[in-house]
Each structure stands twice: as C-alpha cells, then as structure tokens.
Amino acid sequence: MKPIFQTVSNVVTIVVLSLVLISATYTITTTYMLPQVVKAVKVEKTFDFAGEAMPLNPDTRERLDRELSVNAYWQSSTLLNIKLAYKHFPMIERILSEEGIPDDFKYLAVAESGLRNVGSHAGAKGYWQFMTGTGKEYGLEINSEVDERYHLEKSTRAAAKYIKWMYNKFGNYTNAAGAYNVGPTKFTKEMKSQGEESYYNLNLNLETSRYVFRLLAIKEILKNPEQYGFYLDPADYYQPEVSLKEVVVDKSVPSWKEFAHSHGLTYRMLKFYNPWIIDSKLTVINNTYKVKVPI
Image (tube, rainbow, N blue to C red):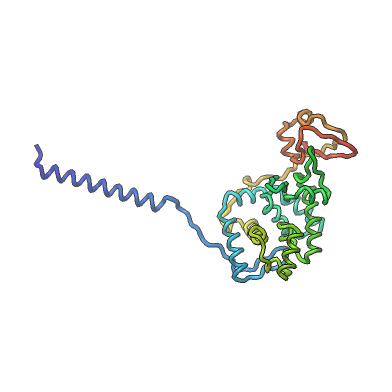
C-alpha cells in the first residue's frame, strides 16, 4: 500500500493540472472566440455625388461615417450588391447616359432596392421603387397582368426622366436625390418651412436625412471594394444576360406556362428573365410586348 502522503500528493497534482488545463481552455476560448479586425472608416477626403461636393462639417462627417460603417460591416448585403452591380450596372449606365443623367444615380437603385425587384409596405415596387401613380405618370404599364416597375430597362428610363424633372425643379442633383426618397412635395415643403436650399442643411426625417449619405457610402465602397475588405474572383460576379433574344408578342397569351415550354424553358425561368410578367396569362389589346427567352 502507498503511503498516505504520496496518495494525497498525486491527488493534488491531478487537481492542479486540471485547473491549469481549464484555465488554458478558457483563455483560448475567450481570446479567439471571434477573431477579427474591426477598424474605423476614414472620412477625411472629399466626397461628391454627381459632381457636387459634400460639405464637410461635424454633422455631415458623422452622418457619412455612420453610412460608411454600416455598409462596410454589413458584409452580406454589400457583397451581394457588388455581385449584382456587375450584372445590372452596364444597362443602367447606358440608359442614364442616354437620358443625360449623371452616372452616380446608379447607386440610387442600389439604395432603393439592392438591385432587386422588391416591394415596400407603402406600395413602392421594383428596382427604382416607384409608387403606382408615379410609375404610370412616367409611362410604365401597371395592372394585374403586367408591372413594368419590375422591367429593368423601362423602369430605369422612367427613373431617369423623373430625376431630370426633379433636377430642374430643385436646382441640383443632390436635392433631386433627397427629393426622390421623401417625395418632391414633402421636400418642397421642408425647404420652404426651414428657409434652406440645400439638402445638407435641411432637418429631415431619419430615412431621408441618411439617404444621400448612404448613396455616398455605397458609391465609395462599390468603387473601392478591396479597400473595405471585399475581395471577389471573376467567377463570383453575377453575369449580365447576354444569351437571350426577344420574342415579340402581339396577341394574347392564354398560358405563360405553355408559352415557356414552347420556347424550351420552365415557367420559373420565364419569370426570371421577365419579372414584369406578374400573372399566368396576358391580355393584349392594341399593344406589343418583348419577351426574353434563351437563344
């Protein structure tokens, strides 16, 4: 039989070693639970929207810092924006150029919808978040079978015309962007009640007061993704739709399912290429439509 002091010594040794292991495990766990480097963004350089410089003062600096921080560290959303921009920006850029609208307004579509066909609780829909009345006013067909707010080319052209109208009304593109968000009537009311002529000097609702700064942040990050930690390989980007042709439809379509199958694609893929089709059929009266299908 071992001496009692030796047994006690062994027990003490085991206890000490266990405590050391527990301590080490705790240290490792707490030290490496979330390994990452989080740094503050820099807002010391000059920022502009559509060639119009943002005035830098304590107020604008903090507002821009907030939007840069939110978008830089909301990685999943910004990563998807970068991928979708590669797919949709070529068409948006072309139409804005044709309509005489500054290229920076493409970032408005990112802020409005994330370059997706989404809808809001207020009823705004599509890439550019048109309300029904405004969409129709600018030439978009909106009914129970067709909603051209979901048509990228047509809605972008409508948005460009709407932006041009607001530029003429409010005198600069920064004001036009702010008015796009809150609506021209409300923007006019705030300008008059506060006696101000610049978006940056207006005290607006929270969403609109952040809006242009969000555009500036999106522009900065999408133009310089690697500076904000976003690294993509060429295969990561969503590709523009190039292997498609347009089929002219000038007669009613009783079943889009049958139409899709007759052109060698599924109903799902027909809607993917033509999201403006919102019903299972189409009634044509003195009109024509162009439907995208694979070549």
